[in-house]
Every structure is written in structure tokens, then in C-alpha cells.
Image (cartoon, rainbow, N blue to C red; front, side, top):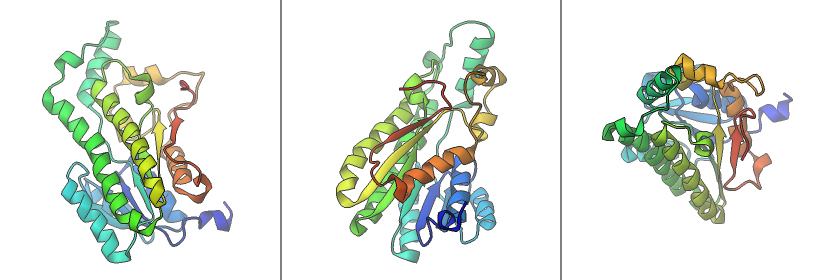
Length: 264
């Protein structure tokens, strides 16, 4: 990359959730390499701290996005230090390994998955609290900080599962569909105050979630007609595009990044 491109976020203050691993960690590294001062936030505080030590000028924050007080506290800390926040990438999220196992068992047995009737309230609630409520907490906090300055860019991480709605994964698909709709609604409101909100919707990506995916399901994604699992860095590059000046005319966009598995 040329020198200008490597500094395209120079002087900007950024906060990234889910920064302890996967896409969030890749976003932190990319933003740091391109000149931003980054706050790496994760529910796993030591993981965020370890990453921050690897990225010049980065700071770590222990944040559970399902807890609105913790989210507000993290944003308040950034404002206390810098008086503003220019970029937010919300990558925090959870999956349901147990539901994945049930789907894989059905696949191996060549029978339809039977998941919804077995889902407990705790499993449903956990996915919704982190994925959907967490996105609301982060978007709300971001707008509170950014709208007074009439500038800022927020990128949420959705999922291609919103579009193909995989059988046996209703809570995850619903939570991410909520993220997409929430982000688009907020985008229409926020742009009047100079703040852009957009979404990247990854397909299968080599993250910690993917590592927990049963082998039978992973084989199902191994289609030679499409690109293999994305790397976290490939998805991070899309997030940075959406957060950057090059995407100035994108508002409420949902960029499907699933390697050609399907289109919408």
C-alpha cells in the first residue's frame, strides 16, 4: 500500500467491539496500521489487552455489550480522553455451539434438524442479548457521542444467515436480521446529523465461531464453486471501506460478503 493509503485513518479515534479475536481483532490491527488510535473492547478483557499491546497506540477496554452501563462507560472513557469518537466497528457477537451440534447430528443422520422445539429460553435470550441488544447499546452510545459533532461512521457486523435463514438456527438468524434492520433504521436517522451507519454481512469466516463449528457443517460449506472461508482480514477490509471516506455515499448499506454462496 502507498503511504497515503496506510494513513487514511490518521488522526481518527476508533472503538472496536469484539476486539479480542476474529473479525474485531483484524479490524483493530487494520485501523492501527492505517493511523487510527484504537480502543479495543471485548468481554474478555485480557484478550483485548493482549491485542492492544500488539498495536501501536491501541488501548483496551473490558466491555460486555449486553450490559448498557458497560457500553456507556466505555464510550464515556473514550470521550474523556479525546473529546470525540470518529469510527465505531461493532463486531461483538455470539453463536450457539449446542444448536450447531444438533444441526450436525441431523446432517450426519440424514434427517431434518429438530432444534426450535428444543431451544430453551436461556439459549434464545443469550443470543438476543448479545447480538441484538448489544448492537442497540453500541449504536445508541455511538450516536450520543457523534451527533453533536455532526460526523462519524459506524459499521455493524451482521451475517449472511439473515438471507438464507439456515434451518435449525432461528435465534442466530433472527438476532442478526434484527441487527440489519436496526442498523438501517438508525442509518436513516443518523445521516441527518452527519453520521453514517452501514453493515457488513459475512458468510463463513475463519474465526473462533468457525473453529467451534462441527466438522459435518464445515464440510457443507466446502463448495468448490465458491470462494473458501473468508479470512478475518478480508472482512475487516470491507468494514474499513464502509468506515472510510471512500464510502461517503453509502448510508444504510448491507454488503453481503459470502464468497458467492448466494446473492440477494
